[in-house]
Amino acid sequence: MKDENSKLEKRKNISNIIYIRRGLVTLLAGCMLACSLAACGGNEEESSSNSSGLSSSSSFVTPSPTPAPAAKAVKITGDVVNVRKSGSTDAEILAEVEEGDKLALLIETPQNGWYQVSYKGSPAYISADYAQVVDVTMEQYNQLKAGAVAQATPTPEPAGGEDNSSSESSASSPSSASAGQPADNQDAE
Image (tube, rainbow, N blue to C red):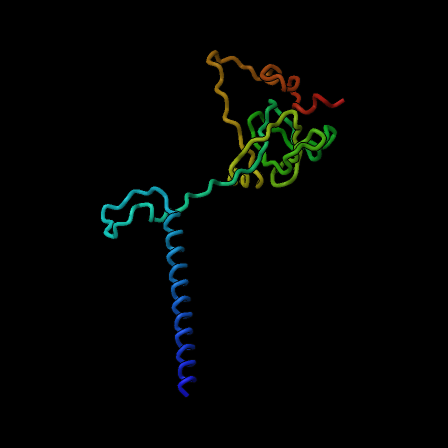
């Protein structure tokens, strides 16, 4: 009987040692986690009422906001450029846009020299020769895609008061079309 009590006592001692070890391991893991989290803090200003004696490196930093994702649009580089129903100079002209106007870009890589854009909420095409891909905010992109055309800021007229309306389209840029003709008609034969 004494032998049995001795064995029972040993088992209890071993069980107690195991529980103590588990407790210590859990405590150690908790301390390591707390230290790791405290080390994640940045260089925030140290509070003058820090009564715990801990340095500011144990404080937590709130993450900075992520920048708004950018989207793509095309900016018109020709004086007056046709917006077409398909990517061809023979395709129906839906509208004309002016230099500096922006349209939401649907496919970033031009297909056979044409960018697919959104015009009044529907797919349309602009000649890649007269457009440049630019970054816009998602808010601007959504407005453009919904049908808005971002208008270019008007250029002030010369102080002399001349009426340049008839010669303006042929002289203002090397990519402009002949007088009165939208830019993508130059390459139609």
